[in-house]
Length: 190
Image 1: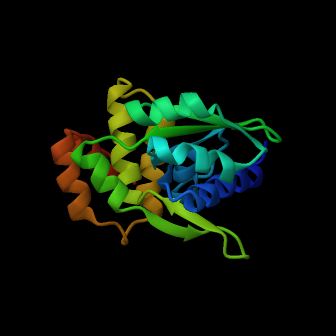
Image 2: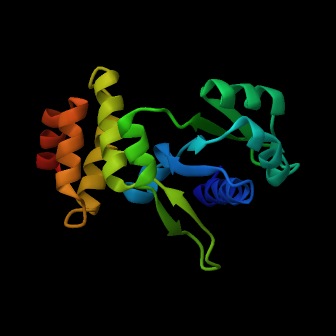
């Protein structure tokens, strides 16, 4: 599967979220590829603020190209747990992570940015580069600080967004999340 196909599936999802009035942002490897070093990815990650009552309209908006277990997704939305759907033509898995109630989760969601990805003006919401860095530092720490992929993503985002990042926000949240030393190291590596 090539990157343009993955991006087109992500755009289809974003358009369905918007049609069903579901708040969302793109995260994960695809987001960091758009913000840093492009790399292949096997799935698409979205954080969604999905309510059980929005599941049926979302399934309808996604259409027949997507395999959606409506009842299971409704239960996941009620429990605020993750679930996935599949884009059948490309066999792409789309992970839906329900928005959590933590302060950082809500800050991350409120700072999402709309980006245009096609010449036709199609776009979607993506997490901010600062929040991509902070989330990846959390994953890096939780994974025992051994993932070279996560670390490379962090360093590349910092390098490519240098001069445009809100360093005060980065440092404040890194301190609150306990990743300040990792952030300082990544900034030196960038």
